[in-house]
Image (cartoon, rainbow, N blue to C red; front, side):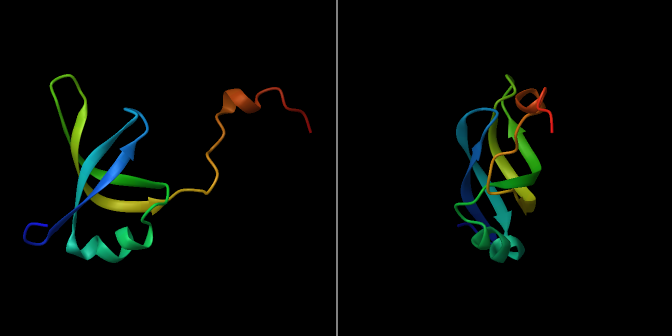
Length: 80
């Protein structure tokens, strides 16, 4: 921890790897509440010239459903 910043490691599904993510002390209760859960995070990303995210500043966090969202291509053709 440095000053009022805190950091966690979040998994980026698009890159299939973990990314360092900083968040303000005001988000500590929300981050703690959702530790080891699937979440959607919004904020500012730092990227390499190739577009790979190397760091992230979390501004908003929202829990995702327990089960992965099923892509439309997997349910296409299912009849009631």
